[in-house]
Amino acid sequence: MAIKHNQQIPHNHFRKDWQRRVRCHFDQAGKKESRRVARRAKAAAVAPRPVDKLRPIVRCPTVRYNRRTRLGRGFTLAELKAAGIPKLYAPTIGIAVDARRQNLSEEGLAANVERLKAYKARLIVFPRKQKVKSTDTPKDQQSGETTQSIRAAFGVEQAVAPGFTEIKKSDLPKAVDGGAYRALRKARSDARLVGVRQKRADEKAAAEKEKAK
Image 1 (tube, rainbow, N blue to C red):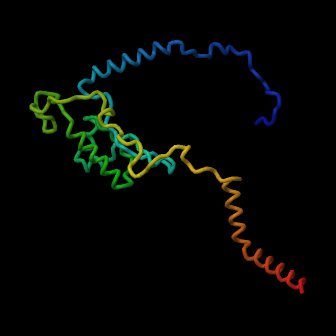
Image 2: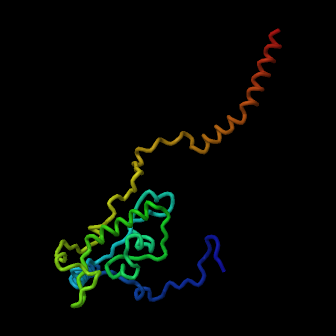
């Protein structure tokens, strides 16, 4: 049964052993160091591979934020196909795949295809066994610059998409005196009552003219 208004709280159990249910984070500084050590260990374990994956550039949802771009979950199957990368091979070379996302614009598709091609051009694939596959990088090209973070090398260059500009709140036009709603309603009322007021003024002028005779 719902409780309304400022009434007494029924069956208030305020004498429980609450101290047993409170968790204090006194180990916060220690955990921070543990996470740092774990990140270093992971980077050393997967070296020379990066610790993260290549992700696409997508637009933020809703009209309020769709001028901004950010990193998405994964590349669509259409983007992988256009870049010439098999969908099952992509996750093995550090490319995130999202089979549910759909491309809604040619510009977004082209931008992510170029991103995949740029990544593919810099990619070095070492052979896992003695036999070298066709997808592996040749021996003479296996020495090159490496990076631990793909995000640092292939991040979002422009947070705000091209063609859009952002201004500060201080640069916005000043608010209408009395409020925008009241100003709009007054303008609407004035526009509707033009004829009535003109007729009234004409009748008043005619009456005064009659009185002056």
